Image (cartoon, rainbow, N blue to C red; front, top):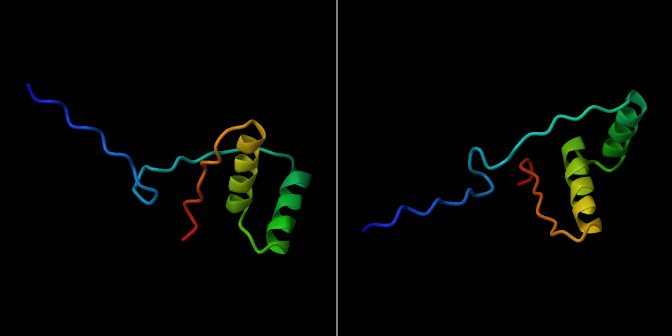
Length: 71
């Protein structure tokens, strides 16, 4: 009897290895985040990744979220 092939894990740059997230927020919050991104020379995506990892850390979880746009 042959075993079924093991599913391969997606690597960070493989197509389909990242999921998108759409969020809605108030205009004042959006403007504040855009200003912070400009002041820190960051993207909104990188700020979101940092915030989600901080949330995971706060709840004792491993910080596993990676930025697909970072090299």
